[in-house]
Image (tube, rainbow, N blue to C red; front, top):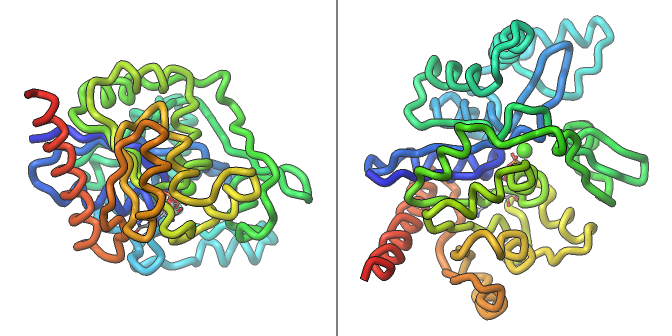
Length: 316
Ligand code: GDP
Ligand code: CA
């Protein structure tokens, strides 16, 4: 068994998580992102964590990559009829999860414990852990002012230009014991091809997280979410550009240069190998596109093989 710890956001992260979970010789722990969390209709919604839960329990809507398969929206219909704001899509069965989580939070249960129970009740074999039990929320500055992350992402459909990002609550947060243990005990650590700015940075910036990564003995591999400078889905490329970062795999690698020693990118980005190497990382060309389950498992296996080669060299 190889103990693998994956740092991941929502849809892009869950794709690689599903691939890793599909390899029998891997014991997977996912450290998810809570910075997309927001309250809707009095309920605490945790979109990235829920995408991971639905994906790893085989319940995800495969066409969307998020939400539940076989879902209805009657609760939202009623909320709409009552004049509530219903731009955030929340399905009926999905509501059940938000009700359960919120009720336990009100009772004072620790977010990490609630998540462990939910994952176990959904029959998930991998571990999913929170990077922090505190509230950390990404906020997005647009020319219309500061928005919550979901206002930007869902209500405004990522249309406004992102002028600045802030991660509210970071100062008061700290890494969970579970995340620290997952980094400490890992034999291989992977940073998923998630949005670096709004999925991975809000994890890395949690006080104690960076130190825990540096204390970890496992080699760290990061996978680019961009192919030929384009995000496969979502606003990562446009966000990088508007915040004055390079919108390509080199731009992404910059965020991980003092963290990950290994970086995977697509064959379209062959020309960027030298620049990534100059950041002190070992660059690899790999098939990082995961259009289906086969693609997800193929990439997961490829990373596992690269890891095995690295550890073989190290132990010589
Ligand atoms: P979100 O929280 O749902 O937005 O998802 P993530 O932050 O985890 O992932 C979003 C990123 O996943 C986007 O920047 C996409 O480019 C990337 N992505 C989606 N599908 C793939 C894929 O098949 N391969 C790779 N390498 N990246 C992908
Ligand atoms: Ca997200």
